[in-house]
Amino acid sequence: MPSIVRRLFRRPAAVAAVLLLAVTTLTAGAVLNAAPADAATCYGGATSVEKEVYKVRMPTSGTYKTGSACSDINLKLTYQGHVGLYVRVCFASAGCQSSYKYVGRHAGWKVIATDVKDGTKYYFQFYESDDSKYASFDLAD
Image (tube, rainbow, N blue to C red; front, side, top):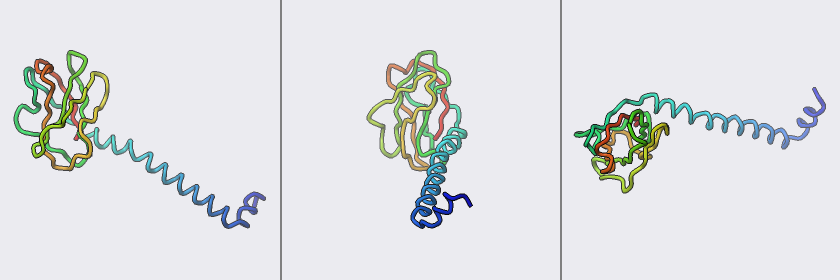
């Protein structure tokens, strides 16, 4: 055995510290590596949706319903002739969010609502000046 290892084994506190550091590092690595897998699961189940011209509501009737893949409601603009749109979530049982969020072109995924329970019914409402615009999105909920 190398001399450093022999010295460590003579000091139980040093051995415990090394083991604790190793376990903490492995655990932290597992937690940090979990986030991309969660995102891939959430965004991997995304569906395509469209905002119709002269409509400020999507879908124009009815609601969407959250699933178990994501804890948030996320949108990604996939086509829109202008720079972007302002949108907010309206919940069937609780009303609309107080503010709009900007979903820009080429900006990737935008979280519109956070910590939403599975099975929640909702729809999107667009800012009035965006009513004449057609847009398509990927939706992950």
